[in-house]
Length: 100
Image (cartoon, rainbow, N blue to C red; front, side, top):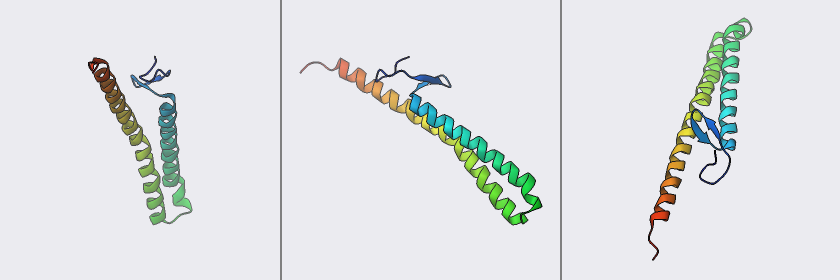
């Protein structure tokens, strides 16, 4: 389905998004999965060769970044929807504006 600019776009969670934005969102999800796996690895295997305090801090680091990596795509999608709504409103306003 073409978007406001006439570009071909793809659906992401029922919302039409730009392919570049979709790629960025998917990269954040991939990074979140990798960070979560690294956090689990540190929790499970790190205890064998790292001090407990280091395991805690590294786990916190990886899980915090995993949380951000899963939260940020929602923010991007929300901003995309808001921007598209503003563009549509501006376009409709300019079409209904009487010639001066």
